[in-house]
Image (cartoon, rainbow, N blue to C red; front, side, top):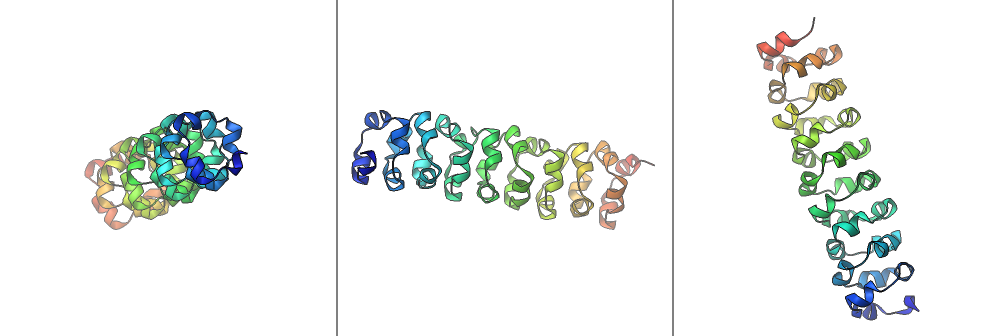
Length: 239
């Protein structure tokens, strides 16, 4: 019976009527019916109703419908549902809802979805969410996304994530972000990444950071990078 309701009939449901639907009834809706759900109805939907949506239904939600979801509803999405979202849907998520995503949900996203993160969403990421990004997701981020990362989030990157940054992403990091890198993160960088560090970024590194660099990394410094080192940084190089 539920599946036979027209899109107009679904759209005509009041918030009270929609909220009264069981999870099984919601799951029985066709993709066309789901797309017809009023944003006001989705806004009052229960977490059980949201979790009951099939991946096909989730993929058919309009961006306005995605925006209508609250933080509790967004957190109720399964990892399969999150992975089924379109890039447009991901980009449409309000920052408060994006920040509410669990680390498991973040890690479940595809690389295409990660590339769809807006710069505002990148800023909204918590340190835990940042650390949950897969290395594949990290390596696909645009330079604009990397540049938008807050220093605390850059500092939260795992050594594996730091090593996954492309040389273009390394160049995109500003001096404040570079200064936020830990000694463990710096020593985890590949020689190609080290060679890509801009002289201005290298110049702001502390002596402990310089001392943490491996001999292989130091050997790959360009002459311009070496010239940019301060006397204190030179003195910090180990023998």
